[in-house]
Image 1: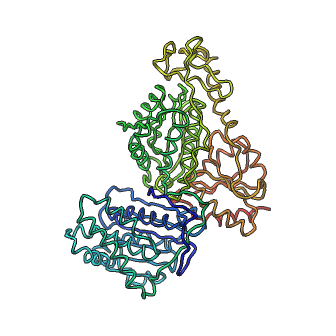
Image 2: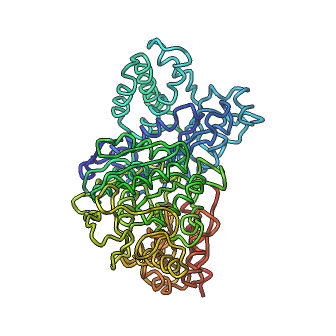
Image 3: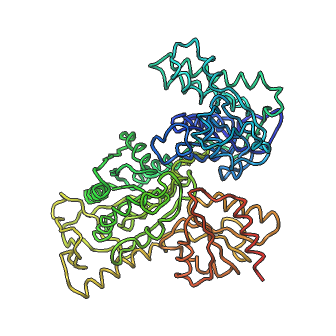
Length: 625
């Protein structure tokens, strides 16, 4: 998805027009659903639409074929105006088997189009999915427009002359389905053709089969256009600000932001991690960036990964480590070591459903308590949260700035949705980012390893091997003046206060909290953080068009909170905090500011829908005297 488009150069559409559409592709985890979803996203981006995606993976690595446990899905909303969510209700569902239909049908709006592979609805497939009767004939789909296609047979016939086996032929079914959806929305197939040729360059028969399947699916749409339920649809290009765009996932943007932040600091980067869903892709992405001075290390466990990153920072590199909630729990003692030694470290937490293993492939925001408070003793550190895939870039840069400026570990929160979702991202002008170069200590005379900058309270950074700057470092408390080991009670109080004061002082070095939509005072403030941004923004915009006095405040800096936030919240009669947890930010705001904030909580492993938020906001306004 590296292709850039000029938003000002997209052509005008023709034909039947809708403002936006929501498409969901679903099948077994081995059906290549994520692959064709990504290819349709690329074609849609190149067509000039704004978009947002929602890859929905099963937790099982390979569940029994045809069962509901193994269903993989990919949802995309695209449109001619600003798109901020993957969509509340699906317009078109393509289901490769009965299990995919059963799992995903509740997401389809009444009257929506359902395309199924009729070949898979035999008795065995129905039994695996838990159907007592065939839904194609028992009337249970009467509220939908159903197109049952012998997709497997069509694919086998289309690739018959390519020389592939029957098993290999059926693997091309996902490309047949993609061809049909490309026809339905007028998407160009050439980007997918180019990808197929490159992907299967060493296996020309497989390449030919996939190309044939893609074209056959498209041709099917053309030849059955008279079918009343299968008509082509045109979605006009979005009028985004002119510039170079590319589709980007949160993981990609985060990786690039970390690399660019290290460059702005004048440092190399050492990324140390251990594989865990959904954080593993960050390691995979950065492992390909050696040309940018990135060193990656896959450790034997989470503890080793965190400690290796701390060692890299001690040596003068930017140490970065990543995980999800369970792995962050294992890293906790090491993060405390980074707090004690006051070394820069960026810790990325791609949150997922919990506790324990929980819902490893589903999204959640339940690690805010862990990020702010989840260490032994008084060991504060800054916490940041990204709000969208593209925003991961800027938040990563900010995390590096804070870590290196204040000599502290920083926790950066994303989640499973942000890590895997994609959106068009306008390439930033890198010249507009102010450098924040690191200054290493070099003077041996009067050297004290914990001498602090009076403006930031950051201690000096002395690289090992610098003559005259030898010093002890470790987890035992240090003397405030000399840096030597100290058990003195008054010194421990002084060091604890200094570490806390340094983190609290960061609030004076970040931008004041702004109001994303609406006025700075009013009846209702909706306060969000992280990936709730898209649905909250859409819901607030909907209510404001109705004339409601509602405003949206979205936090990037979770700890310390922005210095002006207390005064901002006091200007509203009500404060409502939507979160994908049981009420963590709302507790923090109530404890910190004594405001009567209320929570709106969801822990289903799925993002908020715009409709459910809008309904909750209306109900809150009705409660206001």
